Image 1 (tube, rainbow, N blue to C red):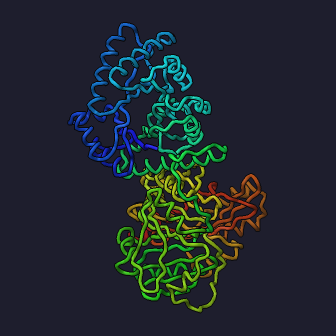
Image 2 (cartoon, rainbow, N blue to C red):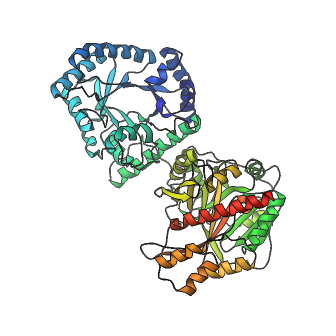
Image 3 (cartoon, rainbow, N blue to C red):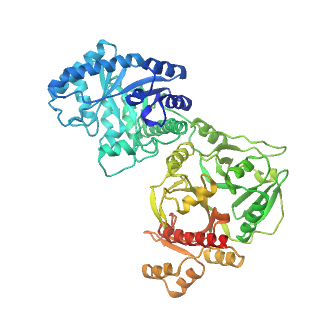
Length: 632
């Protein structure tokens, strides 16, 4: 399909927006009137700029408050329309968006609406132009696509057609299924916008909280599928009003916009296939998402000094050094199915990452069924592939850059010799701990990047996103949204905070950007594992005794069990189905990331949200103590 975006969806000046739209790979652009008014060049210059960039002007918008206006304003409105038609012809577009009248003094008499729209279509037709009529969700008398189609059908003028906008239908919980009955050539244009489900005035909702497809909660595939069934083959365009987007980096946001349309087309293709309906070739198609089998390894960027410190930490957690790279300053530590790589090789990707962010997670390797197809899918979704310097007898792994510039390696599940090729493996003693696998890892993100990360993982990797939750920190609020592979073998909670002193904000400051917040390891016996960790000198996070008094009030635990929980600083949660979570945290390593040891029982799938407040309070106290100690 021809993919388009409205200039109002992006930040920046009109030339900056157009350049970003072209760079992202869009085919066309909707010119929003204000962007043109604020530009110091002529419409013809904008037309030439778009031509030079290789993008078509698909639509000019908006034209408001025409049909059903007071009779003494009709002639003035026609004159106003003619001026807009002049402008359109200078721009080189033949389509204008006319939105339904929202004026309080407009009239809703159908005969008047028919006369006015017919007159407007006649004037447009004389000049070879077209009118796309759209129902605003807050329109005074016309606010549904059914009303628009009824008027367009009765007028039956070749220059008048339906313009559909997903927000205006889905925000009112409208049913789009019958759109399939509209002849495709009478649908002149389609605008798409997602949004979170909010209970608020629909106008304010629309103007501030729209987002790209895949970032909100609307069933956009359910909206687009009947449009495709109608035979529509015109542009698919984004019209996004969003406070955050108005300040977001223009090029990165435009790239997200195109990715969101591709994602929507894939989901619509799947919806049509499920309904056993023909799937037109115009919809984006890419290799199906891979099956996943957990995290193969995590790679940390360190220098020699911090690498030694982190190795000591991990060894106290029960890891054992299992190998040294054959030609590089890279070591491998193992425990259970967990592989951790510490990279302090000079002049490497990890070294550059360390220089930018300090000790941090620079790469995550995930096990996939077919790495070649997984990479093909990522590239089709405009992911940035990565190829590093590969030395003699080194294994080359497919990789793509994550939104923060770190790497995601795609490792075939049955890849043999993954570590034997690159490492001199040591026949050392077995790991002393009982950690089994990586349960999840959590990221700290800048507040304005959450939606971008969600879209990245949903599109390139076909992850699912849980609902957003708000968590209390002693110094503000933390918003968290967890991503997971469909098999749940990979879990990635994403955390943001707009308050300066929260734990998330401190992590962002330390990393000078996004970074791993903590890594959780699964075990089979939490008390045995924590006992061993305490004996080894692992610095565990102290939990206040008041927390355990509250547990006694909420759960029927005996005193001995509560004492055991308190002695080991173990937090506890139970879900409605009887699933249980036991978890304990370390102090942060170098004030950055920390580790969590967890044990899940009876199908518990959450992350212990009930314990976040006490954990963040304990971390705040620990952080304050570390600051005081540093000042002594």
